[in-house]
Length: 233
Image (cartoon, rainbow, N blue to C red):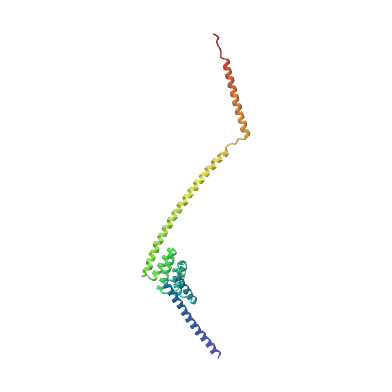
């Protein structure tokens, strides 16, 4: 009896689990379908909410994650959509599904202006589906944008290099002017300084010399007057 009861309980638990799993699967699909209807009506935020609810029922749902990425992309949250598509790229073995994931990943990265990474995603999409012309077109566009980005970066780098060179030249010129000023100042400092007392003594000596010179000139003039002879006719 004990063994039979145990078996009966196990069977009941198994049946309950299967029913619960079936109901959960139905709820998940129902939520995804509701999200799809809202997505078609461009109600992207509402669609996102239902896709997230579906993932609460089954977090491994590929459709739920893929559609969630689409809804978030349509809301211009490209960083988040890139993360979602990147995380599910290898969760399916279906090549068409993989191609679609990489295509959408490429689109998200393209919007983020991560052109090199978007090119890599588009190439992976074409490996899964070489006939996808939309992916091929997007790849060519991303490659064109990458070249343009690189050219702009090169131009900016050239401008920055020129600006840096001008700053370096100006710094050299300023340093040279400062060196010249320092040199002139040093020359002035090297000149012998005369104290106030020395200057007064030198001035007094010059005055004395000038006074002696004037006295000597007076004597010469007086001597000249005495040697003058007048003739009394």
